[in-house]
Image (cartoon, rainbow over all chains, first blue to last red):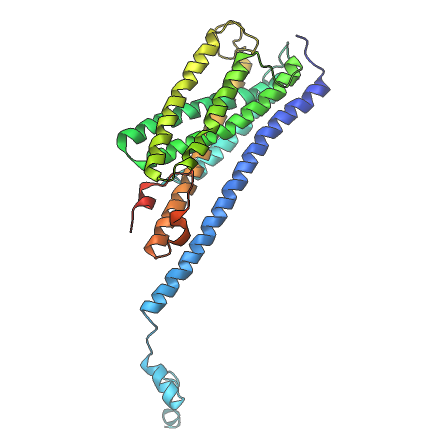
Length: 85
Length: 247
């Protein structure tokens, strides 16, 4: 069987290799979609876990914060008397 | 953990595939009979060999599943077959292109190699619908394994039958009749075969990692009491033991 002209063969060979690379690319794209979905679900679960933790252990009110709320003075602020003395 | 060593494997695969194709194009001589069009051979034949071996490997994993009763083997078998079907599409398309260049036709119905591969491909195309048609995951896995074993046994039988057939229109690559490759061509071909095998293993590991991550996620959802929709949804993909375990 005679070899077909090079310029004709090139397009067929390129076509065959393109099919191969396209398949791989499509596969990788599908995998990327799956990965994105996993990431989204994982972040939803993380939010859920954080909310769950917050519900179980509400943040404790510290003595200093309570004092600040009551007297309007934060615990870490210097007392005016001490500064003057 | 299927993701272990995946980065190194991916880099190795990319390097070997690039090197192999470079060898095929720049180092292997041009075929005296088919000319430049013979270069299709370096992608088409390794893809066909790896696809067929993938089907057989899927059968082996299915045997392990029935033997060990471990759903992870079902998952492995499923992924191997799934990947082989994808490669099978590539084999049929590239083979068709080669047939067009060599014989002037996109498809030759009286050529046993082409038709036998198409039969195997169509046989495996029923694998996914079979899985999807069975709702119970246990039964689905069992039936799918039986199918994979029977179809996997059919692959080498079919290969031998084609070899024994009298008509040798399709060129023999590793055969007994006038088709053995000269030195450089053979080395380039073996490099391409190695690259394709590594590609299969890499993609298999990628998919296994993804499936494993998904099943872990489903399990985590159950642990956190968020098992709503995912539980009742029918799917062709197998569920692993961890994912199926009630919490």
